[in-house]
Length: 117
Image (tube, rainbow, N blue to C red; front, side, top):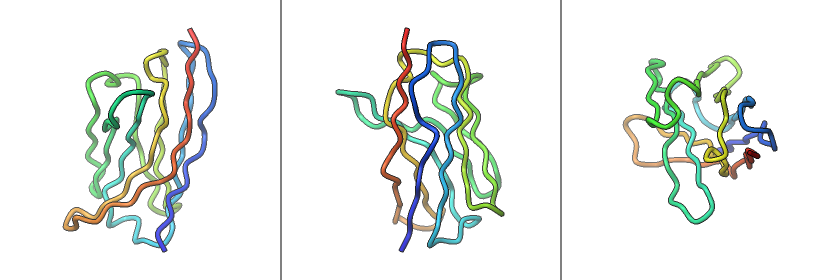
């Protein structure tokens, strides 16, 4: 049974930082592309950052230069370091995993990030 468990969300002031973590189990972590998505109230879920099995990274334009995605295959964990946070970063952040050759994707339950102005 695949599980993705996020942690690290919370309430911070604008300009602050948070580090999200997602621990995966039940899958071969190193064989999966990992990503962070977010969904703000009333908006569609969007891709925030992705890291491939080869550690190539992709970011949505709105977070470039502020967020960093990384992975530790030995710990089956993917991280999202978020700096210079803005109120518009407020959302539920979801961890995502998918093998490059598969159409099957796995999601965590999400962690809430709230940025106050």
